[in-house]
Image 1: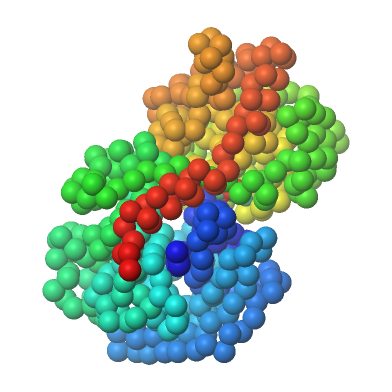
Image 2: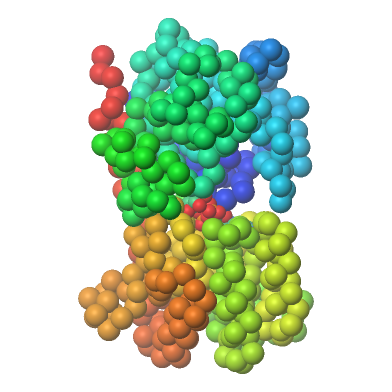
Length: 488
Ligand code: ADP
Ligand code: GLC
């Protein structure tokens, strides 16, 4: 089966969050299931800066964008560590910029940039000799792809029989732009109506994908249910409920090669579930050195790694730090980057407890691995969480996840209670109500468990042995593809 994956970021080329991890790992997992997979992503400035073996293909064409024609040049690279061909769409005006989507504020021309990318991906697909069975796109940046496949490329041999799948990684990011951007899409104004591309007077790219795709998936079964209701659907709950017969929730897997404490080159001493205490201690020493401390702190290490945005429950973390940092029982490390107001409130509380809170503002892949290895407890107190990968990496690195019961966190983390300890399902700590008191209670429960050495070691071992690899999730995607593909 020939599958084209279209995404706006993919590890290791370019990354702002979990979407990149999924788009960088799912293609190879599908290849393992026998699919012939090609990945298409934008060639951002940071992709060229990585020193990856990118080759010019010589393929170049103009892409219509409203009244203009924008040139696209195509580069090729095998997705590192895989057999998957990656095609990268270059255009300096759109992608030669310091960041993927903008910094604390989005770039004002993100609609042009990703309308261009979606159209370029379809142009590229249409130029291939072998037809695609499936075109699988991800999030609002590629939301036009299913519409293009049906409306503009229905007579192109390479894509006309393809079935389209749209994966929703986050309902809160919809690609909402003013209605005149409809002109940039090249699609007829008749599609700008409340049942297709319009949303309260604006152009909605995610909704477009959700309406035109043959099948919809999202990244966990619980999130698939949450988004069919208010507030999880972020205004599109009606669209989703009307398409619930073609909506599947599939939990993300993790790249078990890139995230493996037995072989991780970002940590000083590899470890497994057999010798995690030594490995984690070595990681703490390395982290202490990295943070400029004379020696590692013996107190339990509670960490947070993630985008500093409201979704991630950072206001609860700020409150928690204020409440607990003075207790003397625990040390905190926070690694993240995001909205300036969130960064500032963290800076404020970290400055009040210099010996207890380390705050690292920035995006650092290697440090994220080191923090996972060093931490005892990983906080994921999200307001909502479609799937979440941080808690899955944490399990593999023996950093026990402490999460709020929402979205994919419900589907992956089981609270530690006498019952779940006895039946062997406990792998973390869960709190329900979105308030810092509930979070704090859960942290104290985790610290009490940590003080019980045997109990904790058992929990860590079990967490590390759980299988969150892509195998079963890739099989679920393949089942979706098989179900919808046109058989010749
Ligand atoms: P989301 O996609 O909503 O950001 P996920 O948990 O699915 O959340 O994925 C987050 C990914 O981004 C993980 O791979 C995590 O390690 C990484 N990440 C987030 N913030 C940082 C950071 N500041 N430095 C390095 N990696 C980060
Ligand atoms: C989104 C979600 C996150 C999910 C990731 C990959 O960014 O916020 O929960 O894990 O996509 O699917």
